[in-house]
Length: 182
Image 1 (cartoon, helix red, strand yellow):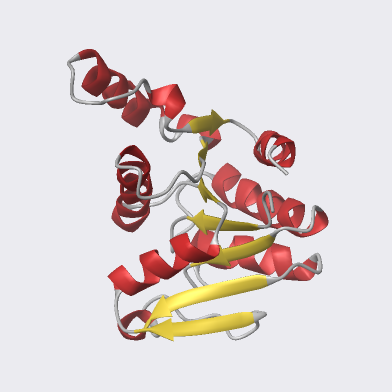
Image 2 (spheres, rainbow, N blue to C red; image 1 turned 90 degrees about the horizontal axis):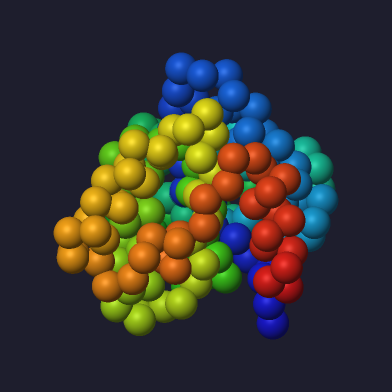
């Protein structure tokens, strides 16, 4: 009933702006403080590790889903509430989607983009109707959102961007919005 479990998609690196790390840590703490279960990629490096560590340190429940071949590359997190090792990336994404009520996207690379676009695509195709929320730390996704506006303007999207994704500048704003969905 309502929002209970939130998937967090983000980089296995921390990026070049310290604000990326700070926002990941703040989000992890807030998820725990507000009683949300966190589901994420299962690594202990980069923003992935930071958001998980912060949630755990604040008493939160964190489930990691990691493909077998990434256990050493992303350095599987051994301190989680639960860690599930799956055979491949497709299984990881599917299971994360099944276990969450909404997805939060933080800065990241190709993997994060893949996860965000798959969530948006599945939403558009009515495979699910889970909210997709983006933490646009330091304007990280602003250029991408401009391109999505072009895609809509030029007739390649079925709905305006604001109907598919919610964009926030601060971790507290993400949590405030999710709390309205409870």
